[in-house]
Image (cartoon, rainbow, N blue to C red; front, side):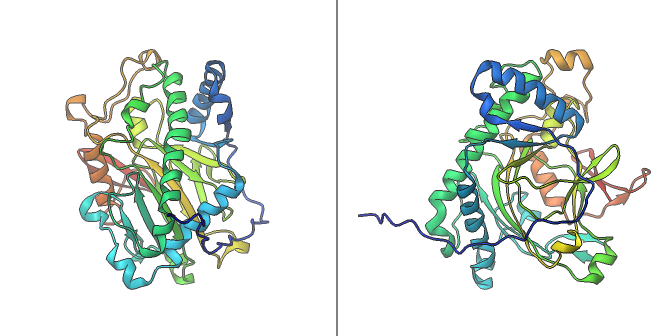
Length: 363
């Protein structure tokens, strides 16, 4: 008879909120509870359209998880990082530079950041099919909850957002949902991630940048808000901080949505920097759901959209030469933190060419 006892993970205590005065981005807040009716979705689609065109980032609230459920997921997220021996971690390490897929551990110092400095972030990545690869012993009792969490992200958060995006492009509601089938091959995954403090020497050499400005690879990224200030987005006024909101999601557009929307919605440029003074010395634990389109999908604009027909379509390449979602994922993932970037003619930008398409990194 199965046990009725719910396993209790060690409790993760996050850093206190910063008290420093920071230049925060003014992001829209999308209330997903209003997406239950056609009228509500129509109104939210308009709000989301404005948010994506303004910043490409927005908050999502009323997503179906209570604060207690979210807190427990952060406790679970810390298990593979803080409660698995180093030798066991090596047995479950992925190698994204080779596979072009994030699975298992990404150890610290796997990526080059800048000026010879390597990263201080550790990931544990779980494919949306949690049975695709085995998991460390300490995490196994919690896999049913991880599976439920992944499914909640996909069906109760991602899909409503994809429907709103489709409506904003005046397309049938399920257009983008059909490109993100939970049961077909794809790179979608949940990431449990922890940033560790760096040496002062590394901060100086990288100008306090922990992760250069970039666009995400997939279509939509769901980041569960946490209190350590470090995430910034590029706005017309310059880099702006992202404010923590309890039990909210921070949602942003990625490359794939830019391809599919013909440049109407841009992948959002964002970076991670050293936290403010009163949060330095603390670790920064994050939970992210990275949504990728189905591997076989060819990344060409949704030319049937009346909106795109009115505003015009911007292509990165000819449709005949466009990569599939799988080809783009492999190119971006395998190159990240490994390739030699070249200085652009644009100030503060470095470039690389992947699948014949120029990818920019912002610093």
